[in-house]
Image (cartoon, one colour):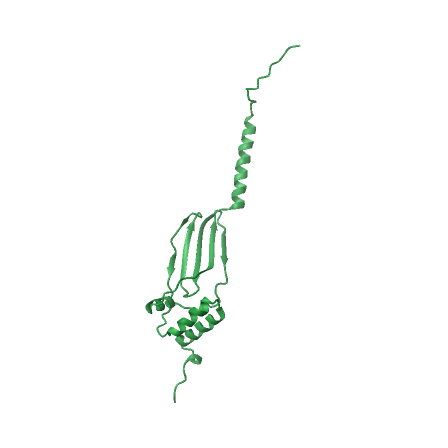
Length: 170
């Protein structure tokens, strides 16, 4: 009987087929993770100031490089600034759109504020200070119904709704 010594230091040889299978498995696993995760390439966000109706947008690339917020000041806020009334912005999310790596676009939106559509981008020179104070107080209290009715009353008067015009003396 002959004795055979074992050399534990020598590693077994792997076949090239095994190496290619491992490499293929890693590549497939990475692709599956990429498909499931599908990173965002570009996103766009819109927020609205619930006090003034001003809007701000921002773009983000690859989730890391964001542009500065671009603000569109509403006519309502311009009028308040002319009168020396400064509002602290209360930004509310309105919508977002994301473009994924494979071209899919995902959109998200909120219903927004119920009275947002009542603040058109026009100057309101005849806005009374007491109306501004009422709108500010109602918005700060979270009373959207009152804010909507106050803004609607102002807009109707500004846009010429006969029901909101004072009666003419005859």
